[in-house]
Length: 305
Ligand SMILES: C[S@@+](CC[C@H](N)C(=O)[O-])C[C@H]1O[C@@H](n2cnc3c(N)ncnc32)[C@H](O)[C@@H]1O
Image (cartoon, rainbow, N blue to C red; front, side):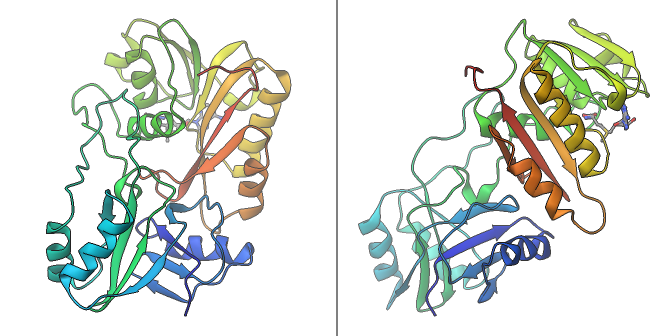
């Protein structure tokens, strides 16, 4: 069996990843834990946390030959362990340490080159010197704030901004659709940007009291596009309804950037996801902090980093 690419699904998202790959004409030979091994060349995947783009199967006679083979290819490796944990630990000990430190937002994602490897069997290693995520197994972790934000949703905003490499700057204007109880609004205001929170429900009092925060009670879907630097949305809505909203704001030309959550209840609307992905300047990704949902980001052609 030759392996052309390996796709790492997030916990519980294996089936959806398999659907996405099948729709794109990719087959899965076998699953190794959450890692789908596919014979065809790699493709961009919205649902994979990480894609191993150059996987090589290597016969290994010993722990030492495995570590030597990896070191001969490059310095930095992260492992994805499913079984043979003891042997994997012994190989890891022989490799230069790679620190998967939690990020302190806002700070850039790690920029060092990172490969990934696993043991398919005690004597068979799969190693890919290249992969799409800068993070170990696609896990973008942060030093969390357990006091300020009223919900954990702010981690999605932090991760989306970290992955696109840009976040609201002091003085920029933002709209946060479906903002209550205020995790995203808190994260935006903490960056020093001004934010208009739109929701029918109120914000947590500590967020409502932050400088730069104002609440407008209303329906996000009937709101006319306004001039802003960033449009954020974490509304719970059908993907096609959100797509319409996003297309309306893009067509109006009043926003420079968009970050929004595409919530997928029940059967996944792959057609709507594909429509988001087809928007020029847009990108659809599954964040480590997303559940059964995706994140869409978009930048107008003239948006600067
Ligand atoms: C998942 S919560 C948002 C959580 C928020 N991002 C945070 O960080 O705390 C979704 C919110 O969308 C709001 N919502 C749903 N439909 C809406 C609409 N049509 N207009 C405005 N808000 C809406 C709900 O009231 C709810 O507060």
